[in-house]
Length: 96
Image (cartoon, rainbow, N blue to C red; front, side, top):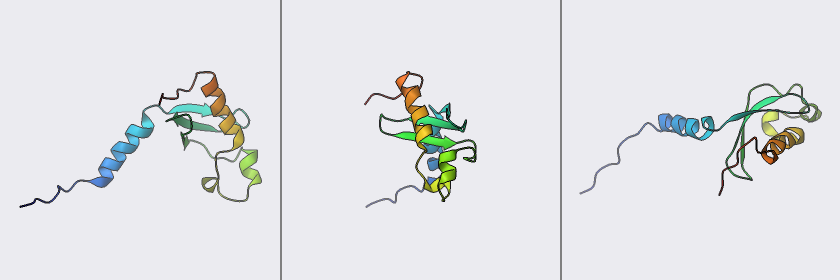
């Protein structure tokens, strides 16, 4: 005889997972070129989570593109700002 798997609230678990993944370790980073502020978490040397806190209106690189920021990769100047903080040891990158 078999039993059905228990019904779980997937949306509630997803919200918990999202908070656990992003909320723990997010650090504010300001672009040195335009001042745009984002929250950043490095999960590995090659994986960076970015949570936007302000619009991209001040960013010349985004302005030069003719598509929404959501469809673009992170601007090169913001990426350089993040990499600089990592190199200075001010933004933690987990081992592994």
